[in-house]
Image (tube, rainbow, N blue to C red; front, side, top):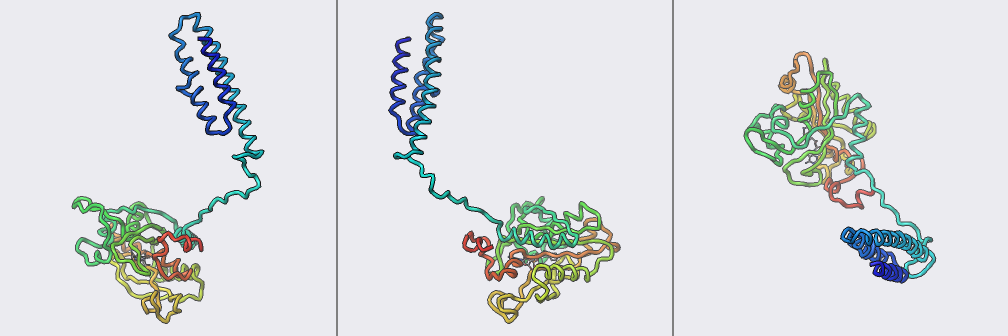
Length: 341
Ligand code: FA5
């Protein structure tokens, strides 16, 4: 047995000396010192030997293991040094380093942060809510009962049509108005950024998945003047004082009165073009005074408290700011577009 060990040692060292690359060195380690390696097998088989032989063979095998480990490390170092000095696998340390590609914030994230900043500096708090929403919060609690025609404007992807708990991908961030009011007492001032989903054909200004930011302020004595003042201030901060803003009457079942707010088209300067559907204006948000039914639904006294709410299209704000004429560029994954911002 001791003779066999001696042969194994000589053979292992001879093989190791002839190795010149790191891969073969690893093969050698596995063959001799690995879990099923030749020397490991001998050490494992010690228990089957008579006691006297076991002691002698065990001591010799351990010495060989220590020796082979040392030789392995030496060979490793020698191969590494040779590759730095020249030779087939030489490393050219003068080569320029590989650049690590740096990511950046997506335009949607950038504009959400800017809009959040504009509103938080006016005293609003940022909160977030679920994208998978119940029919109750997306519609019912917002004064849109079953069979209400307004549901047609907001068709979406249904997760479950189950009568007991119909669930959908939210069509707007407005459900968060109700969720926030259920949890808090006035004064309430929040903005809610988040992804929305709609079952609709895409075009230059419509996507089926897009972002909105909801705003809600409820307190004693809040009037329509507060709504206009806040949204004018927001438009001024984001687009500059010279931008034209237009409010028009609009209908949303959860506000009364309701409006939409538009900004003059940056492409045609208000003359009319493809982007603004020849109107000269681009709608960026819907807004209004929170409907008394919604306030009563969350247990607020609508004779004491009033409030305003708005919901704006995030990508459209970015488009207006940077002169982008097609919303589909946002999620087209074209780096030539994304790298510009
Ligand atoms: C709503 O979603 C209402 N929840 C807004 C609201 C909130 C009104 C609070 C009153 C009070 P509307 O469907 O108009 O309204 O959408 C609001 C904004 O989201 C639009 O002005 C537009 O800027 C943006 N938007 C709507 N649909 C799309 C779409 N398919 N793609 C991109 N942006 C869209």
